[in-house]
Structures are given as C-alpha cells and as structure tokens.
Image (cartoon, rainbow, N blue to C red; front, side):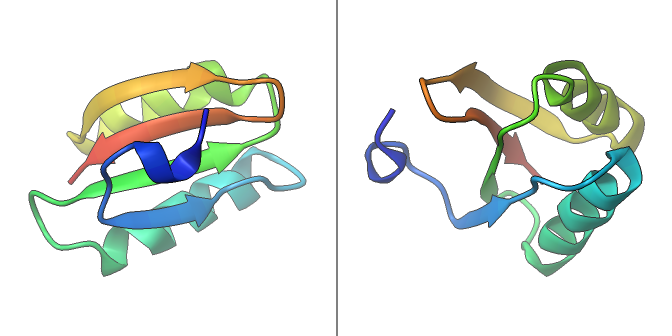
Length: 79
C-alpha cells in the first residue's frame, strides 16, 4: 500500500511498546482531528488488528477501512 494513495486528513504511526501506549497515541491523534475528518493510523503489531476496531467501537468512531501490506497494518478512522 502506498500511504499517499489513500485519502486521509491526518496520518499517525501508532506503533508502541504495549497496548496502553498504542491507545494513548491513537487518542492523541484523534483529539487533534476535527469531526468528520479521517485519520490513517499505521502500526507494525499484528495484535492491533483487533485492538483498533475494538477501540473504535468503544469510542463511537467509524472504522472506514483496515488492511495490511508487507510492512505494516493500516486503519482509516473517521472521527
């Protein structure tokens, strides 16, 4: 996936040492995002494939798309 080929309003690398660090990075990026805008969050940890969708459900955010390429996982989240 080419990060520049997907329309988004903000980009954030949410890779972290543990789940709490990842959630913190995601929350910080989303706080700066205006309602209706789209965040592309990327990470290198396989566990986040479940964690990020769960976070979106809990926070009432729209998970527009998610996927992976050979280097990372990506999540498109609309605030």
